[in-house]
Image (cartoon, rainbow, N blue to C red; front, side, top):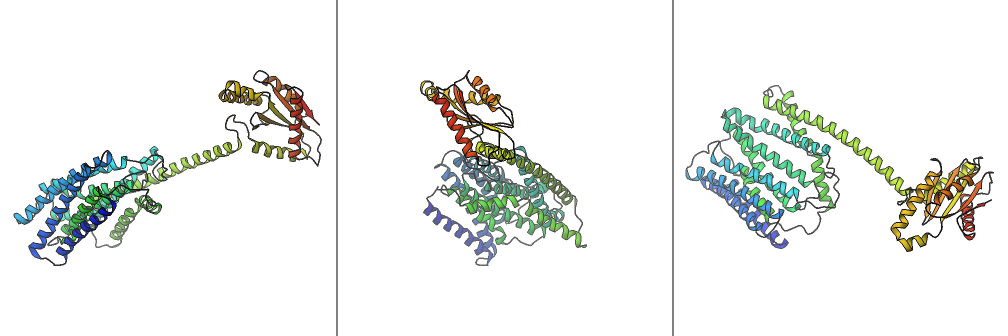
Amino acid sequence: MLGTRRFGVTAAVVLGSAAAASLAASVDVVTGEAAVALDDLAQLATGLFATGACWWSARRTAGPDRVWRVLMGLGMFGWSVGQSLWTWYQLVEKRAVPSPSPADAGYLSIVPFAFAALLVIGGHRRSGTPDAVLDHRSRYSRLVLLLDGVIVTGSLFALTWTTSLGGLVESGNPSTPAFLVAIAYPLTDLVLLVIVVVLAADRKVVLKPQLHLLGLGLVGLAASDSAFAYLVSVQAPEVPPLANAGFVVGPALIALAALAPPMPHAAPRHIARAWQWAYLLMPYLPLLVCSAIVLRRTLIGDLAPADAVEIGCGFTVFVAVMLRQLTTIVENTRLAAMLRESERDLVHEAQHDALTGLANRALFERRLDEAMAAHHDGVPFGLLFVDLDDFKAVNDESGHAHGDAVLERVAQRLRQCVRDTDVVARLGGDEFGVLVEGVDEPEKVAFRILDALGEVISASVGVVICADPDPEDTAECVLKRADKAMYEAKRDGGRGLVIHP
């Protein structure tokens, strides 16, 4: 790896040299056999440079950062072997490269190593950061990811077949090995590019600069693969050097990926969002292009009808799209249910005590306001203020853990003494409130509470009975009277109750 400044200079030199070599062979700066030689040797040079950069930088790294470089070095070495064989055919033997040939084996050897390298990069993830797109690791999200890959690969393969590969196969009437080699290039290119886009959309992937440069390098190789297949399908007399620019720039970008310094901080949010949008739109853009081509073939009658490969790809993509939409509907329904449940949990947590599960003061005061409003319409209610006796001594002598256990047992006993419609709240510390509506003698509830709590800890209870409506009564006044009654019970020695008029 290089420092940031040295990397910038190296990137400018490498990309400038690669672009200059491609342009020189394309704009007649050099012509004839010299242009072919320059083009072939530039491809070989950048391939070997990428191999050396991967292995050299691997020696200075460790862990996943080293493994992916070793793998890409092996892949670029195989690709360079294929390019050296291609160069030998053209420059030394001066004959057309057969298909298939040993050069194809070299070129295609990059695929398994690049695939493994991308998996290593994708597995090196940052923990503890949320990801809006890929963090739902359910079977639904994995199925959507698989279907997205089928849609993209099928659509782009149909596009490649329609524009170039189909014509190449038809014009050449290739043997089975030649046919498999012809199909292998676009298919493997598409699979690798889909993986790059998916990983780039995941904000937890640590090696983002390396992934982006590696992805751009694979894009360059794929672009020139497609251009070469198209020119061969239309029986072009020669392949212009400009069509091979991706074979020069692509390896150069892979070399820069290996030399890129580690990212000092998180990627800018707008870049992350751009990649996430690319991921979200990934299944639909190639599908749209593929659909447009199929529609054009349908509307223009002089074009040949769709063949079996196009029909098979179209049907597969259609089924994948339908399954994706159904899966997305099911997943969205599940997520909506989870969101509603989460909202209910948040509301419950905001209105209830975390230790005892009882209502908190805010909920208790709101229910008391509602009881006051009903009381003005003639509905009686009783308010009980319960305070545990000598609870501080429990904490001091037995510890706070034991004190918390006592509070939980008190809460359980209080709930057992009232109806489900009544409100039991922890108002703070060792103070509890009980609101019973529609009961003429709430003091009976108070006696039950004293009996139930006596087995756990003694308590003092203040009771306010609101039987006859009083227009001047407010919730605050009633609560203060209950608090005053409780303190009177405390002054009387505790373990009892006082009823406030």
